[in-house]
Image 1 (spheres, rainbow over the protein chains, first blue to last red):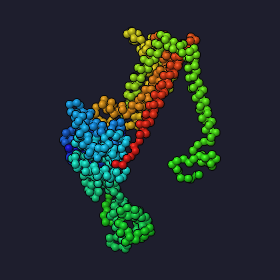
Image 2: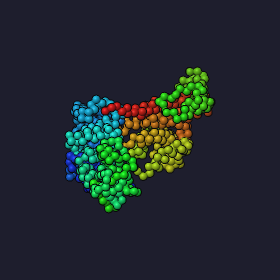
Image 3: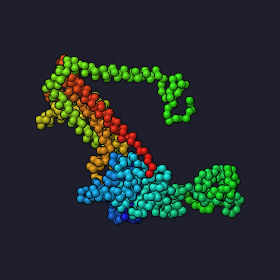
Image 4: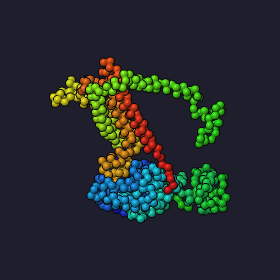
Length: 325
Length: 301
């Protein structure tokens, strides 16, 4: 299902959470709404779900105006940041809830509900905890149950609010890859909110960068990372060194050399080295009293250049961007 | 021992060992003094009176004790008290849920005023609470004439007693539910809404099961207070024997008529109800605690 959002505005008191947002979400795509907290991304997600009413503007589902439609009639599944599982119901009953509350005429039979719930439990690989209560599960397991519950009503749109925000790093990474595979299998239009740029860049087909209730840029992960449209996007996606005069340079675009040449014109001093990890982060002081910048080099380069605190070195920038400030 | 790494089990507190875990507790004499004062106070002001009530009640033997309840006035007082309590528990359950729901799930103007007003009955003397209803519904009262014309008795009748008791016991359920519902937030209800549940289904299947122990706890406190309420009821009841005497009022009348055994027998019944309520309350507290501390045990995925 294609979702078109047209000049959507939502205020909380004097605070504009959404300030005239227009956005197209193509059918079958996985879109990430990325931005710092308070930038309006969650409000947009809640407006799409119908949990929040916009002050003005419209939302179209496959061309049909859905602005005033109740959440239940939108065909959306919503996964909450803190799972929002029904705490007194077993995992099975949580997933079955959406089917059980249907009016008698469209409600599946108990046998059918059982089949469908077990199919979903298989999908999330938690068939063995059908009778457990949510508090007996780990965070990652709870999140998968929340996902199965949302999928049980066979939505056409899946909305996820910071789905991995409350999980630890490793589970987070596993789960987001799993989500990507799941999305490809079930063919939904999916939208997830995150403030983690790495998550957005890794999982999404399309990234929408939010700031202060407005959209800064819409594009593929590659586009927004390599061709940021605004200084905000440039700063928000990945590390960037901001040099005087509005020059932005990413740490991995800083080249180091032992001797001065046309590619390495600037003198710098090493003031810090962080070698734990796949690459080495080097803190540099440009010139005698210039700005501090961060460079990333390989372990081999570090050894070849014999970098340590106080090493005098030459630097050059492989790629820079200028932003009028 | 200062600067020692924190250990999982506290070190054994050997006698005379220099300051072992002494920073965690007071010297022995302070502890025993405090415990002694607390126990003496409880004994003097709680245990002794209850013992006195029961000794007085049984002074003339079991026969006289049970004879006290074979009296028509006593029987009527018990029925009236239980009726009033039942009505108040039901109505305050509904009001309490509605108020707590409104306060915790909606954003609206005047919310803080509502929260303050809920506590009003705690702050106002019960006698004044009763007086308010006399001023409103008494013969000379604001609405008194209208009710008189329609032959409806409020004051010196059951409705007045119920109103006064309702007023006094209103805060219990709401007070108990607001923090519970605040802690739970609205996400579960929102999840149910997106899944297609209607308002009533959400309340019945999502909200109510989550607040049931808090609700029961509030209802228990409410019923305990409703059974024992004296001041407010005394003002509106009119003390008409066999008609508007609740158990506490009946006890007072018996006492003033020097019928000590009967008076204390009724008092012992009221005390017994209080003890039963306490036991139920304790059980509910245990269940609430149990539900809360059934914490995630983080098994491996």
